[in-house]
Each structure stands twice: as structure tokens, then as C-alpha cells.
Length: 314
Image (cartoon, rainbow, N blue to C red; front, side, top):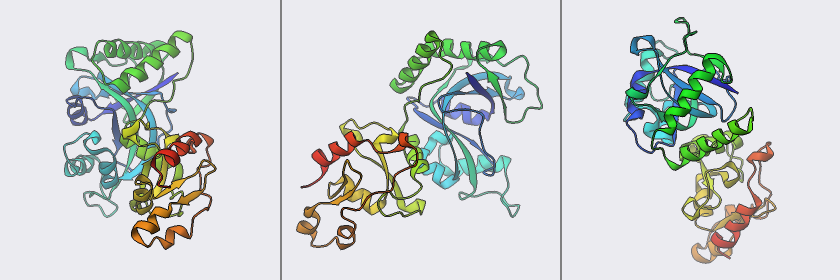
């Protein structure tokens, strides 16, 4: 199993370490033209402070997704899980490391690389871990380690030991339980981590990139919708998600439209009965929806059946 030990901004660490019940975090990179291919979903990204702050390992999170976003969009997806109190402080921190194309300080529409993490865990200072002995000071971003041997194994084992000593949110406890179970069984991979709300929305956006009903591509007009409502126990998982244009999302949540288990758009008679309009929606009644290429990302027939039976107005 691999892990990536990454140089970590001290202010980002201290802000998020003070948060309680944190389910997700955006470990952002200031340059949006870069990619991140070091980890598979579920593998750990380990936070290491730079030499000036002691070269210590101070926590970790489970890799969920890499996505390029503007600071504006990153803030609206993750809020202060970006590591700052407000958007302007995120802009300021990005500006420490990057300049816009015109040489000016970047603004809220500057594109950053977002390494999106589930179940981030931060250690208080007494629990800090000695950084890897083979770390070179010239490493800028980070380094991939084999977590089954050498310094990678030592650091990862101590991370899990520290985490076991701490009170953790339920999602983090569940994810770590899965990690330990796999380790006991000798499996070389991690299970898919449970997602928070921001990661759910980002994952649905990444899987669809267009409205499943209308085909609209403009991201500001699109919402990640839960099929089985979250308040009714619907999970933050891709099979419980649809990317919908905002107006269709509102109608879907209120039961005026649904997606049938055979993946067709259906409009309730109640829309016309109550409002005497909805022509643009009835024109698409019975049309097949667009679905992601990956079978794992497609909407669950069981959740669609639930929506049709419990939410849809017949």
C-alpha cells in the first residue's frame, strides 16, 4: 500500500486542527495546471510540517479525488474545510505561493489544484511524529512511500497508533476500522472512504460533468442532488447522487419530477395541476437520462425506486 507524505502549510494545519468533527478537507495546491496521480482513492496523504516547523508528521487524510477548481468554487463546496475562516483568507494564502497569468496576485477565480481528503485527522503537538529519516530538504511538494516497509511503515504505524488514542467523528472511526480490518487480513488496498457533503458534491460533479436530464454543462447552474434524501438516511455516495440543473433539482427534491429505475425522466401531473405550467419539463417526460460511463457512479435503482415511491407526487 502506498502513501504520500506531503509538505503542509502550518496555518492550514493549525486552523483545521482546531476544528471539531471535521469530515473532509481540501489540501489545495496553488497552481491549478498541475495534476496529482500519486494516490489511489482511499490511500493516505500524510501531513508533514516543513523543516522550519520541526519536520514533524501532524496528521493524515484519505485521498478521495483530485479536482481543479477556482477558489470561489472550492470555497462554496468545502467552506472553511479549505483551511481558513473565509474565502478572502484562502485567496491571501494562495497568493503567498502563486501569481495570476498577468503577474498580479490571484483572486477568487484563480484555479487551484484540490486534493480532496476524507476523514482528516490532526495530531496535537504532544502526539506529533518524527518525520521520515530519509526525507531530503529539497523535496518541494512531497514523496510517495511504501507503507509496508522502512520509514513509510514506521510513520504510518505511528499515525494509526495516534489516531487510536483520539476521539474521532463517526465517519473517521468507520474508515479507520476498515483500514485496520484490511491490514489484519493482509489486503494491500484500502476500501472506499465514506464521504462528507462537500466530497459528495465534488464526486457527483466529477462523475457527470453535465445535467443528467437536460445535458447542461455550465457548472454554476448544476447541483449535486441526493436521490434518497440525506434527512431520510440517504448516504453521501455516488449511487445516491445525480447532477441536475438547479431548477430540475428543486422540482426533484419536492417530488414534481423523478427518475425511474429504468433511468427515464418522469414529470408528475401535480406540476400542471398546481401551477398550470411546466411545459418545458413535460416535453422531456419519458426521455432517458445521461449516465456516467463508470458503472460504479451510476444511480442506484433501489434509491430511484425509493424516490419514486416516497417523494414523487403521483
